[in-house]
Image (cartoon, rainbow, N blue to C red; front, side):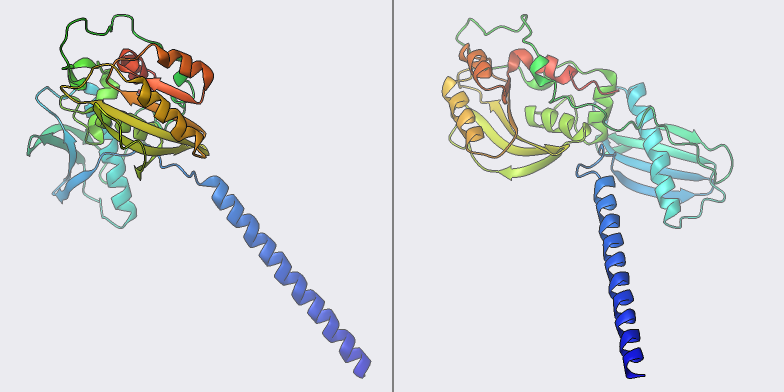
Length: 312
């Protein structure tokens, strides 16, 4: 009888250990699936709603989107209407009753005052239309992966006079309707944007995780240098944005390129991109040939760089 009991205990112990191993393995696989399914990069940022309320049969949304002085474009109106529907859909999932709602008013900011841009009519009371996939498209391509295809615009040449002032980026770069709309949707006003506003806005819209606070390159002369870290699809990138200071030389100094190359060599990043509104020195092209991980977007390449994002 004692032997039988001992055998039974051993069998129970073996079964117990087997069950523990099975559940641990299942939990590990579930965790791996969860990690694999979730992207480490945030989706394209959405417009921020600053005010929302429901009155009668109408839900009103006010977005923190600058309209500037021009009339709101069709792309921006369509984008905000689609975003408003998704915002209301999220609120409904949180328990907001929509039984009597037939309309969603969509507004954005004209200075400090909300301006009504349009109204979404629901197909039936409390019934939201389908998600506008063509408008709220997620990033599908990587503009940095093809950044070496960006070429210089031969119409942009170094000034021959002695002036050290350069035209602001907001007056230099031409934006397509969709690009203008997407930038405004995340709070960037194309009429007053800085070089940093433009570059970081485009990258965030394309699904890059932008890390602020990177150190280095602080001793650059002739411009304001800010260093950022970018991640997407498992790749890390150093981004240096160098904005021209009035009164400084309008051409990028070769010493900046040398420091930039050293910074990449001393880091574990996969690539490095320097963006500036200064003109490029001839030595830049030789440096790019020597180290293809370094890419330089100077004033002659800025328009092509912006166009390469292909926002729709």
